[in-house]
Image (cartoon, rainbow, N blue to C red; front, side):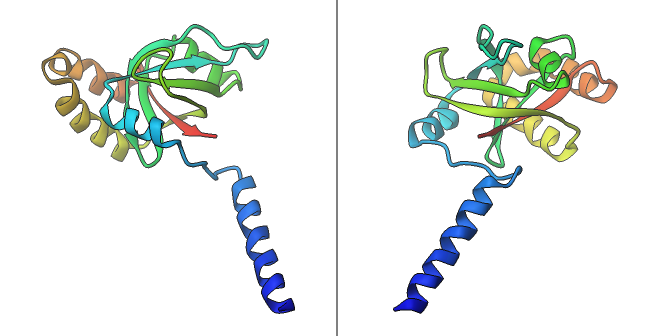
Length: 153
């Protein structure tokens, strides 16, 4: 019986330690997962200096590898705040008051995700994507648009 309690305690320590790791992610609620699978937009509110959140901005997104990915010009508040060390964001799915979660944003150069994003956007946004595709591709290439990964906290 002592071995059983010791084994359980060790397993619990491993789980808690894993959740505390910087790269560890938390599972999203079923409502959020369903909304991410069916919605065309997320609404991202980024953390201001006073720790309040800014106005939610509607944006196209990719949900891949357990994270929300977007592409934005460096002049947007979401990019400026990430670069200033304020990477926390609230992401609402489908509508500004839809199911939401908090996440940590970071700029990424993952070209494999860019390829998945382009394919997903072509399917998800159809004709609208056609008008923006060149801007996204060239922008991510020349730095006038940045890939941002929002990892749930």
